[in-house]
Length: 516
Image (tube, rainbow, N blue to C red):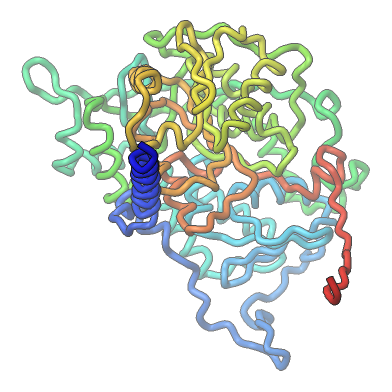
């Protein structure tokens, strides 16, 4: 009997090793997933033609002459796409908000910050409403020199088609929507797109829908006094005479546009729900990636859940700003919010769930994360404990009357045989129509597992939360095209200086490695 028991144990261990290796191989295996990423996302700024000085440093003096009032301008744009911003400028606050929207931060020390224009960052910019002409005009006004022609062409190339199309769920029907009628007409010339279009009972294509709607943020803006100190490093007492007239008018216009309701005329056509995946892949191939938006206020099919923020939950200015990017047009945009560790990503996620007020699925990377998310929902929201359901290897709550489900990526992406109880919970998760999916620490999840999870459960809006947009497998662009663009990224040094996160201290400890 002893030998038989040992053989059974060894067999089980061998099977486990086989499954583990199989999953690792699946994550590492090459695939044709590039169809999920537009080809323009791989484009880089052309850096040819830059001369080096006697110190082997890049010399831009001949290419980029300074403007007469360059002292009052806060930044300059290099021909290689790098942008340098003076953090001590009186207009730093506005310039920083703009650069975070259009570029990726490289290095942000105390006095001079460095950013870089990338195809992906420009895609994120147009997705939150910035137009190609706006990006170029604002850079020209902010720059100490003229913006290099190569940069202008790169911006046009990367934004010519991005952000022009949206996939919107209204009254549980899917529509492809655009504020550019010519884009819709070009799209419908493609046979694959036409096959995705909904037809009436006679087999004829449904008509194009033209409508005007007023967009206003679903997150009400509060004053900085109510939310604590501003995250800007600029003194409030700066004299407005330090700001050039064109910049001052531009910033007043930006503030006004952010607060005002905006009327937008759109053209849309309805598509078949079962053809959504085909539609998305074809649009990416045509260089028109679809931006996902959820008109949750008009979703009458999915019931509202009884959840709201507690009066004690006060959003900090940067948390509020990140949520205004997500709900900026009265709908819920899918995308990624980047906040440093300890900056309150959980409160942002809970507030998003309270705003949408539809069934919510939260995914973390460990069982500890699941327990933390449950505690955060109970701390910041009015949700009843009986409405929160956990699904981990140790805790499998019964999903009866569940409004908030919390699990891990590995539990949902598990490919081996499950227990009877786990299978029942998985069937329930698959059958639900989730209003919001919160994806915690998205940068840590292998790309293959992430794709598997997104095909298992369906959600109208996906919110990714992370402290960094850097991945070891260099597939961060893949993940963000699956979730959505970067909506907001906070500067951890400013949060630290304003007391929102702990200050970092570094100490050197030397240990004698001699005798033991």
